[in-house]
Image 1 (cartoon, rainbow, N blue to C red):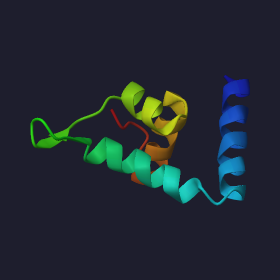
Image 2 (spheres, rainbow, N blue to C red):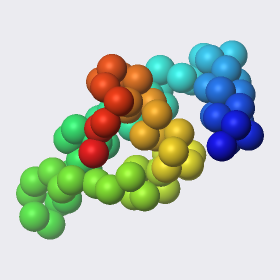
Image 3 (cartoon, one colour):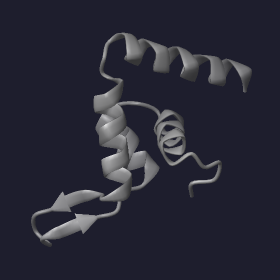
Length: 77
């Protein structure tokens, strides 16, 4: 558990250094709150954490932590 937390902290720091934290954070929040637009159905479809992680190319845990920080809540599911 400590190793995982350490890696997530490292990843967050690296993204801040690259000045991409805002872009990735915005995508994660947008995908979770709005979903992704489906042109066939003409509406937004909710996404799971696995789908969000696949879209932004980061782990599911990292995506959840970014969203948890944004919402400032412990339980987000």
